[in-house]
Image (cartoon, rainbow, N blue to C red):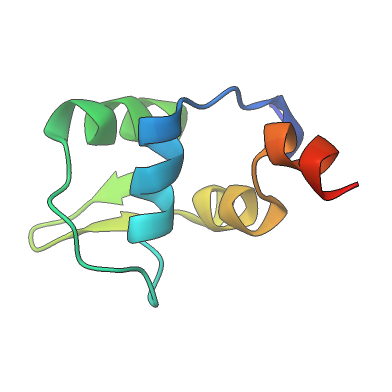
Length: 72
């Protein structure tokens, strides 16, 4: 099972994950990107709305590894 740092997400995937946070800004979600995130186990689809899985929350909290170098 991959760890949070092994996910190589696109910018659209990161934006979608961030938008799904409870404090995320309301945006129109791309169904294709959502399906990709569901396949990775980061998002779950319910009858009403897509939600972050526990793994998806951990990935969002860890942040994008590409941004770590900028913060250092």
